[in-house]
Figure 1: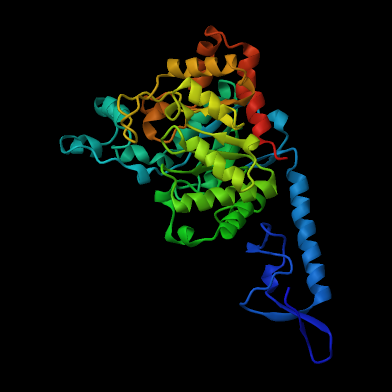
Figure 2: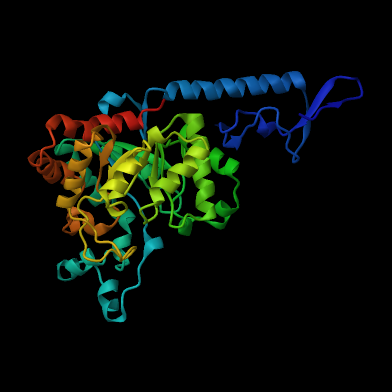
Length: 413
């Protein structure tokens, strides 16, 4: 702490008035760091006033943290975890996936640019990332509203919406969807994969990224007062880029301050999830409150899966309903069928990991909505649960996967 004396000998300190709050907490959208001097806009304040301002800011931060403890934070506010019900932990309701457009071969150019209709639906299902229109899920708010109502009627209670900065997160729309349908919606804070990082994001320090994510949870995101209830999905590629590593470290720092849930999008390589866990752990993250997504397209070997499971994260199988012959983001793998996904769940349950399994569909393109002949958000409840029961997973274990595990993960410490 730098100090100075004024002419009368009174203690003075040159500070930025907007830099007086606990690290990571935000008031009026500005980051406050107690008794830290910043070079810009310096004004002299008495130490007694500085200490008073810092004390009030710390009390505000502590108050917000106390309110979050033991609760789930939805787009409509804090919720008793017991009220969540059956939860899909990895979905998208508004998203723009243009970042991952895959140019089709020349002979398919015309069909790739055509509207989605029954004549080309099979082609779109097999090539979902080569149909430009298919990537614009955010255009389908009305259809998503209807499908959430169907999800609610099928026994669904909550959805974790994983759309983050850079892929068209639309919090006001999520809030309205929650009001209209009665589905509890938990919004995601943070950043997706490197290709969606802006130049501004790439230049940010770990500390700045941390502050933004903490603010999105404590005060609201995207210029609204709608607060996120989870960090993620935090995106990583393979190999993990330097910008993504910064975001991972910031995620761990934010999680350590907030005691909040985290969800990760790993790169498409069997060792990617383990590398992500290593980075998070080294930065102080809580792996027991962290979900590793997309394991159904990442780790196929049973031995490797058990080795990863020992690290303690939640194990998410979240591509139910996705079946395609060629997975364009990694042509070396074969996308499993839903029956094979159920087999993996059965294996993990038998190995004692029923307390760490989560499931979802990761709907992020139009063709997976029932409006376009897809399975919709109710597929797991209507079709996969009966399959799980027929393959030896008990109703109690199903309830753990759909109700208890999401509840424990989403509850703030």
